[in-house]
Length: 161
Image (cartoon, rainbow, N blue to C red; front, top):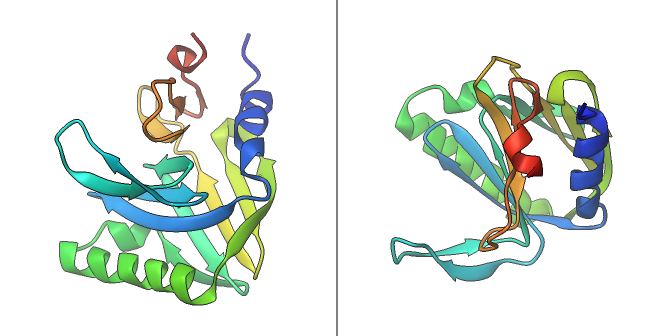
């Protein structure tokens, strides 16, 4: 039997000491980049900037800065214009107040994760734990390696094969 907490701690431990370098979105999914940004050509021929590690969050999330909620998943569930504006605010925070270095990763039940960074930045991921629904994924962009996926609050067994 797979120990979800142990697997998450093992995978996300590589972020300790690595900086948050970028933010993006795909519809209502938050995408975060960690580590130095580099250019990568996608299979569709477009060039994008990616970090050493990517975290794509489709479940409930919250970013706090200096103990105040700065942004959250409800901000991405509104109009496209409002979502773009909130994303630009997140990008501005990273550019203007960074670097934000990952100091600690704490793992809770059901795939929940708390990532504490320098300069009072904190990311909370609250897995929705809906069966057959992806909560979040962690991977090395551009690598042929499998993505580490939390689905339904548990490690997707496909991630471990």
